[in-house]
Amino acid sequence: MADYTKDEFVQLIKRLGAFISFKLSNLFNNLDTQSAGTIAGLAFALVFTWRLLRSPRARPQRQPKRQASTSHSSDATGTSNANIVSPGVFTSAEDASAQNVIDEFFQPVKPTLGQIVRQRLSEGRKVTCQLLGVILEETTPEELQEKATVRSSVLEILLEFTKFCDLYLMERVLDDESEKRVLLALQDAGIFTSGGLVKDKVLPIHVLFCSTDVGRTSFVRQLEPDWHIDTNTEIVSQLARFIRYQLHISPMKPERTAPNVFTSTSLEQFFGCT
Image (cartoon, rainbow, N blue to C red; front, side, top):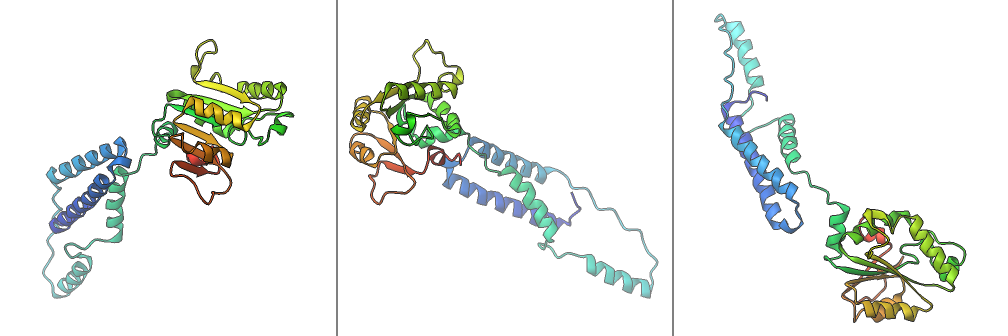
């Protein structure tokens, strides 16, 4: 650490104290969104400052005595005045150095995907979700007669779902072959085996098929989930009175939505994965 005069050192400590007080104020005003890591960093910063105040500062080395001389005295006085920094005044380099040290203790801790999923779902324990346009790349039952493709970007989200809630995937299909095609695509994507799930036990993931949209609505009503995820505006509107929360996947936000209906362009966007 660079040598400071006594007044400079005191002013630096005051700046540290003021900045920590500011951070404390922000922390307690937003405590519900702060992580334990931030609080630990704050405690460490306070201990660091306290020890800094207690530790003795190295005494500045004495300058060698010089011969008294008119010319030398004049030069020394000019040089000395040029290097003196008034108490309480700091160079930009010193300010930046102190700021960088403090900022290291207050770096925000990024939440994990699991924490985000739990928070966004409000700890919901049962989720129903449409397959087309949400889990699958295909958007119509007709497309499922040709192929079924799982969106790789949703796999981690689905895995987090299964860690704390029951997940029911459902879709309208036109024939039995489409149903088999969807199940095979889900199996190939590892949805039934991710997270150490065992096939011969009760799984937290269930797949349901129906022949009409009314059938999907009926499934949701019977299951009474905490959340339902769907792309169909009419179904979302009909279920708004019965389901606690819904996520409407749509490229455009509808003009009118119920207070318990959230809108997002994709499952990934809603959970901050894009």
